[in-house]
Figure 1 (tube, rainbow, N blue to C red):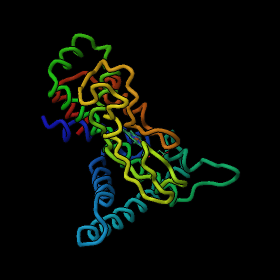
Figure 2 (figure 1 turned 120 degrees about the horizontal axis):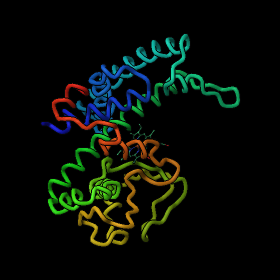
Figure 3 (figure 1 turned 30 degrees about the vertical axis):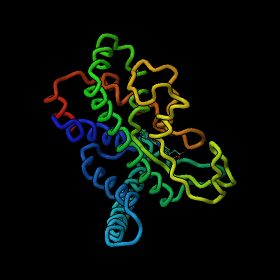
Figure 4 (figure 1 turned 90 degrees about the vertical axis):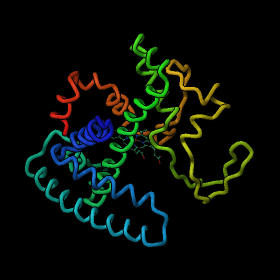
Length: 251
Ligand code: HEM
């Protein structure tokens, strides 16, 4: 089977769709949205490729906005037990979220919840196939699964980088980052810092402690961290069938 196409991507996309409260059957459409949004963030500004990415992004945003307007209308008439209904009803100091704000969160979730969780599943299988001794160790001691997932997150970070702009001068290992300077922080590299992780380039499913930063750190700590750990343990989702049964259920 093709692990990414047949398993990881449909699973992660359908879990996010289920949380938001949008029809699971349309997951390939959401995946296209996610790809277009991501392509924009990967395109260098200037040039034809960036222009195309921007045009596609604008078209997808319009499509998502129209779709969202329908779904919001339906929920205003008939509230449901889903995230979208909660976002519509949420109120702080008498203020509610505008449709534009809900759209922004919708776009964030479609990308943040899918690409990363699917990468984690793919990376886990790749790491275990590459390190047969660790696979045998896990088979012999399945209780190591949570630690093994932590080690996959450290060894092959599903999200490799993120951006930050310091509000004041910051010093990191003798290097001053001036306030206002855009920084590309490579998470994958931080999780292999030999000052923090002895034998940092060794894949060790029993590593303890394992203070990896795959979900970052601080106020933007990933909202879906617990969920994605669960998704990568297939059994927690109650599925224990053959590949054919899985395909029939999720594709
Ligand atoms: C293995 C899976 C995942 C990884 C490695 C991951 C990683 C991350 C990282 C590194 C950030 C911080 C980005 C930044 O600060 O610039 C983040 C934020 C976020 N993640 Fe995840 N994520 C995963 C799965 C999920 C899932 C399944 C969801 C939701 C269903 C989710 C929702 C979010 C949200 C909403 C944020 C923004 C939090 C904020 O800015 O306060 N993530 N994630």
